[in-house]
Length: 216
Image (tube, rainbow, N blue to C red; front, side, top):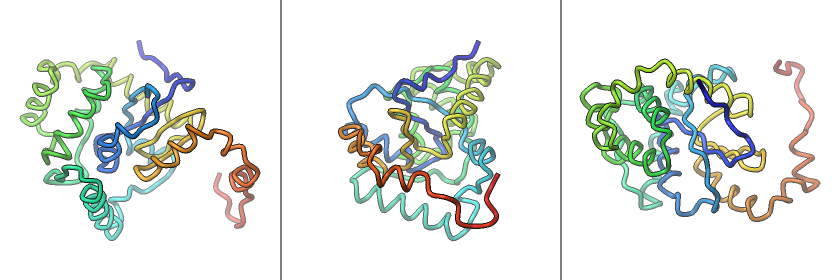
């Protein structure tokens, strides 16, 4: 039996394939003082739902993204080493985190295995090592559960119903905050939620479409 997302709780959506999600989690001590529900989703399925191309499918954008992530890590003083290939298949660690209902410590350890130690979690050997590291030696069997897979699908579907289109994304007070660089905005809105109700924010949030080919 799967469990739906409770949108009344502070939520944090992630996929292990994203370097910027790792960088944001490494700044967890700066987050607003709420207990965010860590919610794994499949990034490629978010892209498919909204008809987006992934950043790594555009060659020049892919190169910039990798350089920018490294720059941000160095700027923030965060240990960082890319895995040997990217994008990689993040399904195994996503299912592991789903099966374990992973909290911040659990999820962070998986991110660190990939983005601090530079490991590819998609191979059987590396995944088995990861499972041992997070205290789930039975992980390779856990992720075979159809219920676990169904829960991850439901997470992703629920996320799109909230408008989530990428990771990392905070969902707080029924608002979305996307990207590692959105942390200052999250903090500001947590302290000053009425800013989102200001006249100018409301105006720009409902601007009319200015082209003839308005998307469906």
